[in-house]
Image (cartoon, rainbow, N blue to C red; front, top):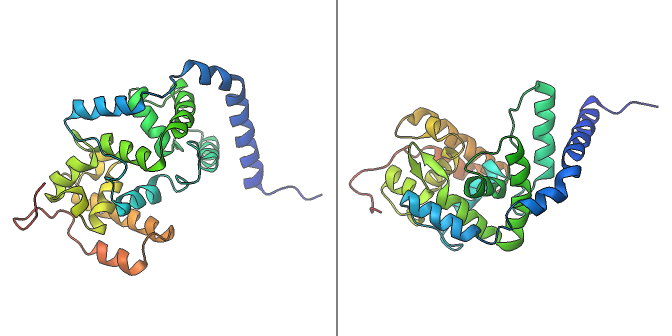
Length: 244
């Protein structure tokens, strides 16, 4: 009998490890983590503390949402808070490379981490974020989860929320941006200190290209649209901008 390919064997080991780690504590996690009924109140308190507006579910432009999904959570619209494929892939990578390099976190998990866990998903908090993500998905629509996440996410050095970032980088309201600008905002969030265009425009441009390529791969935009967006200036803050 032929042995399964090495990748399949490794993935099987990863899945087994995940099951072993999560099964005994699943019931405890569900009981001991908050019920998430106050998630909206927590997001509101967080955005108030940052001095930025809290977005409603109809306040996020579709291209903005598409860019974030393409680069951060490609299964966002089909999972229930946990992306088992992404989690297994991340765990397999960590096992093979003997590190804690890949997070595998969904947008919902990241929201849970920020509003319930003080921004940390290390150790027990990683498991807690899984339970909280499942609870949040039972309460909120995908559009509201996206809006909450984009309201409070870090978007630069000392800057929070995509509304404030749109104002700072482009001197324009969130609904007045171009495809390239939405792609840049989506790319900044994963490493704000590195991709902040006011600090490192070259890195921001490279990251924007990565986001646009992901959007093409997910069929949110065409290759021609991506090429046009890449030709845009990284920062457009001239006197002709509409203002915030």
